[in-house]
Image 1 (cartoon, helix red, strand yellow):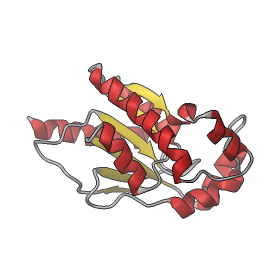
Image 2 (cartoon, rainbow, N blue to C red; image 1 turned 90 degrees about the vertical axis):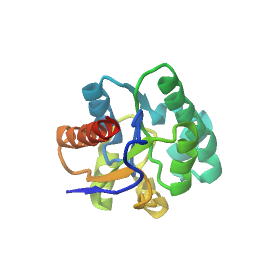
Image 3 (cartoon, rainbow, N blue to C red; image 1 turned 45 degrees about the vertical axis):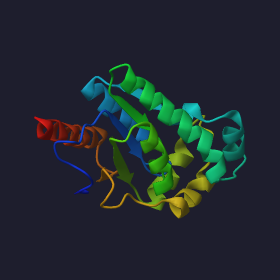
Image 4 (cartoon, rainbow, N blue to C red; image 1 turned 180 degrees about the vertical axis):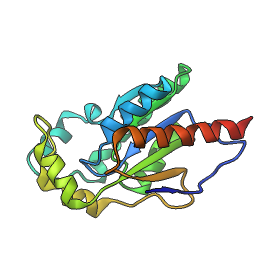
Length: 185
């Protein structure tokens, strides 16, 4: 199921960046890599930009708060902006759970398309619990759902069912980018 949210569209909209967002375990990295590969864009793995303090906090079973996320969001935003400045499209994987986090990223790149991968708690917990070598424990999945503010109709975003196959999700996101590119012509 796909839910295309209106957001700002039309001739002024230019997609140069995509942020694949959602709770832990929804498939942000796999889908983001697939979108980047289809578009020939750079991929930024947001988890790699967490400072060591954030990683240690999550690894110990403590959820991040808004203050913990500020520098991390700025690092992702800066990476996206740098890619755009170099003339490249960028796809980033970032939870972007709250509207204010997405707004913070938009400061760096106002025309980010957010691709929200929706998933249920049980599946997210199973996926996170089965990952090997990741700092995020399954015990924090509930805190992700508690913090989640799904994109609203005034945001440039699409919501997709994260249970769909990766290639279907990537194709749908790329189709949206293509639609917006055609609108500029």
